[in-house]
Image (tube, rainbow, N blue to C red; front, side, top):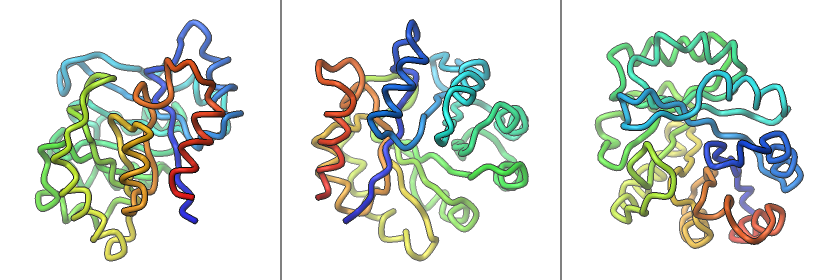
Length: 219
């Protein structure tokens, strides 16, 4: 049976009770904590920052992954390594030193990943697939939680899954990771989902019940 990985999108968490949120999510069985870093320029929003990352890192032993929605990420890789990131995702459109960005991430002991926006083609990034371990495919326009799912990404997802074995990739889904989308797309070969308001946060049900249902999607 496929073992899906679930990452909790921490920009959707209750910041008035952040430690309690982390403990509850751990107990529910999430595999990682997902931290969205935005600079207000690469995307039109300001997201989480280094202080958030440091706190989450100090509060859990589970994997902490950062999604960098910032310009010139190569300049800041060391900062995120020092703050405790295990996985560093970046957008190929965010800078010119893409190869160097990947190598810096690896040299500092993190796992590199690239992000494919809904309008970013696989063909424009195929050379990078030789270098990275993960691909985060966006099912929404990045920058805000709670956006509508863009169904046209399904064809790109299927094409990317066909390349998994050739490049030894893990493929993760971000944006509108609803129960319905997990049930539909996980069997195609998606390795994990970032969970936000579509499935996990702000619901009447508790985290354990939600995670159990999501894990049952591939049973």
